[in-house]
Length: 342
Image (tube, rainbow, N blue to C red; front, side, top):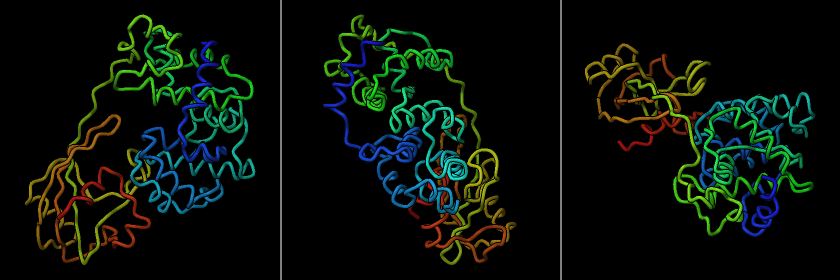
């Protein structure tokens, strides 16, 4: 891997995208951006990043942000445990490090929600430490350059590749080297399509290019089938307010707001009976819709009933439009029913 540094850095200097978190690459900015980008494309994440930094410009602001307001800022990005862990980490940063992220890989790695990749990104980009940030882009690039059929899901393989890349980091250009590898995977050695080998600075070094084998890589271990669950969801309204409730503090979507729901698929009569037993006194069933939401390991197959109610049952929180815009953040699995036109 040693020869890749010079051509890669030269290419990055000429071709890097102008992204907001590259304009002011502080440790906090890198941290926020990398956590957002773990499950989100760059173009989609940028407006969320800009809004988040404007609202919470420092770790201290993040540490004291009211949890529902924080989740509202995150709404649309999904995987809410990421932002929950960010707030836990921000509080530790304020308590133990004076409000600034530590310039130490191991200290960064010990913070909630910061794994090997994120610690490497912050350490190298913000602090110039030769700590690789090995994500899917980097794994794909290296698999093709090395013509390596080792499954990239292997922890041992990732550790070995991290060690090999550590030896390649050029003094004074650690942040650029980390970003160049990421950028090459995102823009040239792309996923889900043919790599743009004619534009690649590593074309002459790439064994998969020489052997015509790029389509084989990266190799991944077979995924387990997702578990499927059926649910009935209730869109209950009364006097312009929507019934919501908080999920349990542990498990999937822990602590987030949700629309009332039950296991299994109820028919219309059963749905109205649910609303009646909940103390909502249903007056009209407007419609039902069916949707599917896919999580990492689970698939929810959902039927939602839209019911107008006469009573605001104390079993639920009845959120006005104004409150829903400020501090009631619904995860996508439920928000898609709110966005459905009635």
